[in-house]
Amino acid sequence: MSPWQELPAPLPAPLQVINTRHETVWIGDTKGGATCIRPESLVDRWLGTFEAVRIDDSAECELT
Image 1 (cartoon, one colour):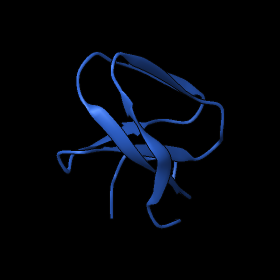
Image 2: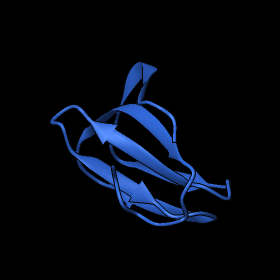
Image 3: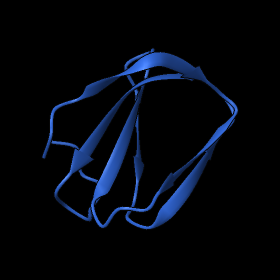
Image 4: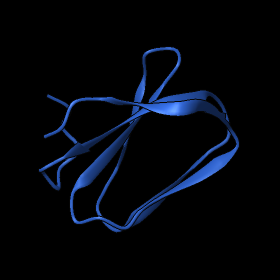
C-alpha cells in the first residue's frame, strides 16, 4: 500500500479513470471522499474534483 499522492493539479469532473494495474487504485476528491477502482476496470465520474491518488496492494476495495 502506498500513501496518498497529490496530483500536480486538481482534475474536475466529468472524467473517466481507467485502472490498467493489477492492484486497486483509489482517487481522492477535494471533499475528503474516495472512489475505488478495481484492477483492470474503469470508473466514470460526473461530479467532483479529484486531487489525490493511492495504489493499494490488494485487489479488494477496502481502504485501510
